[in-house]
Image 1: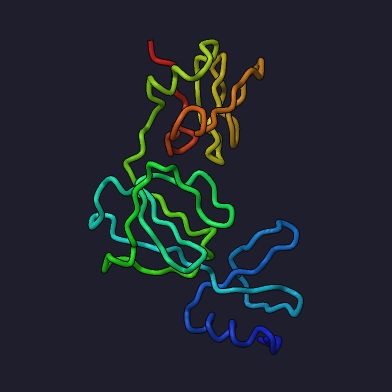
Image 2 (image 1 turned 180 degrees about the vertical axis):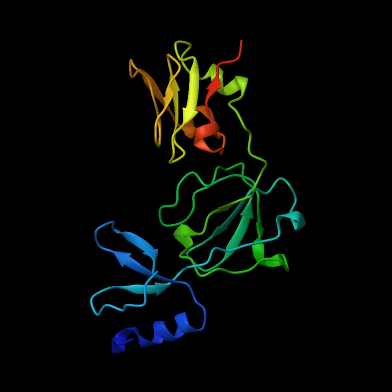
Length: 195
């Protein structure tokens, strides 16, 4: 296998077990390198690793682990509203330095990609509170194969990757509008509005 000179250092890391990604020009994103070929004109990198922490060591009020431009990392009681030049949190958020915890492991991700949410047991269906935020004309809800949720007037039929209806009347459900949506297999996601 011939490796161009400019990629030899990263190729050595791959031999040592590092996960390598290449930048796909056609898809405009980083993808896993799954072949032995090294192209002179392709960008490669070691796959960035996220920050991590043993959440069982952390008070349940803290739900977010996030990095900052200065290299620091903190736990917060609320999610940032936006990233911008630095994460912007609600004024009511509380923080603690993540490095105070021995289980904190610094990742290699850029701070703008560092947001880690505390895992919580996912709900399996929409709550009554969420249904109350969906117009009453919509009786069914389901996720498609990419995890996006929709409400439907009539019962949809399962396609190959998404649900569809004969009248194609649907309503996109945004987490910002209805809250955290269930993380379930799309084929098992169809739910009926509760009575």
